Amino acid sequence: MMKIKLITISTLIFSTTTFAQNVAWRIQTSDNLICGDTIVHVESTCQDPDEMESDRGSGGIIRECRSAKIVIINHQKELEIKLPLVSEKQRKNLEKQGYDFNGMMKNGTWSPTFLTCLNQQKPLLLLTYQTSGGGSAGDLQNENVTSDSLYTSPVVTETNGQLVDEKIALSAISFVNKESNSTKITSISINGVYGDEEKSKKWREKMKTKNVSKYRK
View 1 (cartoon, rainbow, N blue to C red):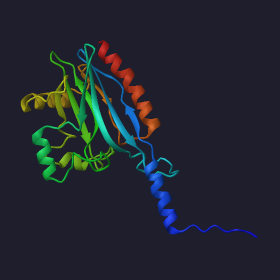
View 2 (tube, rainbow, N blue to C red; view 1 turned 90 degrees about the vertical axis):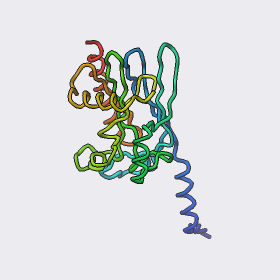
View 3 (spheres, helix red, strand yellow; view 1 turned 120 degrees about the horizontal axis):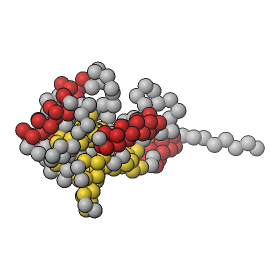
View 4 (cartoon, one colour; view 1 turned 45 degrees about the vertical axis):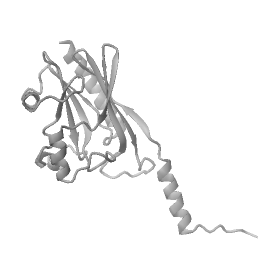
């Protein structure tokens, strides 16, 4: 006699929930950025809820990151700073606009995407954030029009992670925007939320070669 096993709706819901809970959290580590006498990288703990999906659609990989931190190494001393790191003024203004800096970093929230070194007499770090993974003007419209945008107005710190005053920050941002090809400027991707793994790998290899050549000049 053949036995037929019935799968109830509750069983399916339980299985889906169990799968979601079992999605692995992985630590993603960016390349190292050399800035003056300091070596900096970013570590993000993220999961990809759709990693088993065969068709990811046009959006590509969009992860959720429960934490991220900057790791700063200077003269064999290591310092860790939790992200997102934002000035009090920007944080307050963005929170008034409905943004949350205490929860998960995911699509729609501000998450770190680029780290730039302005290698001058007193080196500075610029942290760029995005709320979407686009690359077109339309995709980044929200970042461009938002007051106190962390995309057009990156967070600027000293190499020890201390925020600089507004005048110094504006000067650094202006220089990076106007002199993007300067050998004083080096950038790496610290993008935990967005991006295709293979494309990200190729991009990192390309930037690694470019950054080394810049730094040696």
